[in-house]
Image (cartoon, rainbow, N blue to C red; front, side, top):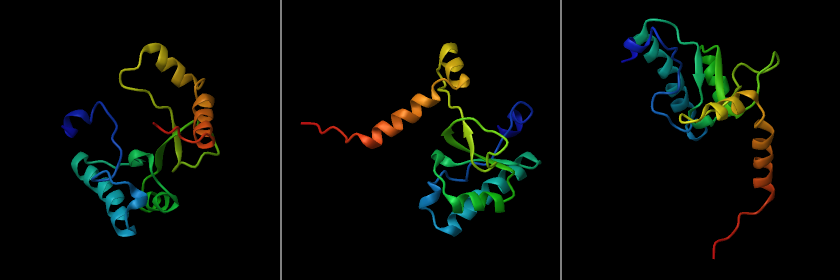
Length: 133
């Protein structure tokens, strides 16, 4: 399936078994990150340069392991824009649901919703969770 899609899509590493990297030991995290790259390169016959952190979970150690594995960049799920000063191993993203309408796609790509997403996260941290009775 990968070979059939290769002329039409770009593939990147994402670990072998989709673990939450910060919960893995150093050895397991290293094997997941580099193993994913090695397997994809063997299957596709070309270099895999880019990585995406599973579930968006990562820490400084995981960034270092992605660099060590030879990737040129890595994508997070942090909403936002990337500029010249953005760390290529902590690239931000614009997430769009698979079933999003064209209007929702336009809103997400425009960046209009980013401040609201950030405000929502701040609000959730400041306000205690409501208890159900």
